[in-house]
Image (cartoon, rainbow, N blue to C red):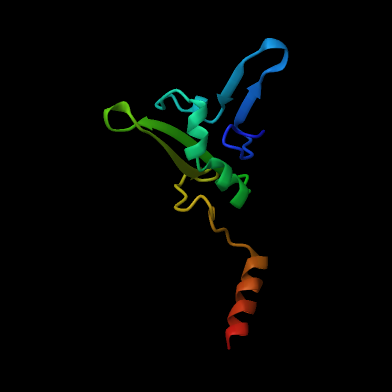
Length: 115
């Protein structure tokens, strides 16, 4: 669904049909340590870009919204973990590098091309 910031995100939900007024981030609801979500948080959220760059089904995203200094600014932090072994993923845009025979062939072809 399209967020208030104009990006596609599978965790954003809105319903304005027949007088309803529902806007929510379903990823934020999974984290009890996060501040309550506001529609303005979507403009600072990296989750739509991460989902666009990486479609790893084994990646679990954890969203935390924190207050800034004196409660004026809000920060959106995302942590990516692996669903297989629970390890942290250093760069969620790239994901967890897995051993894949097809990728090994591609890497060897790139190495041979440089020669």
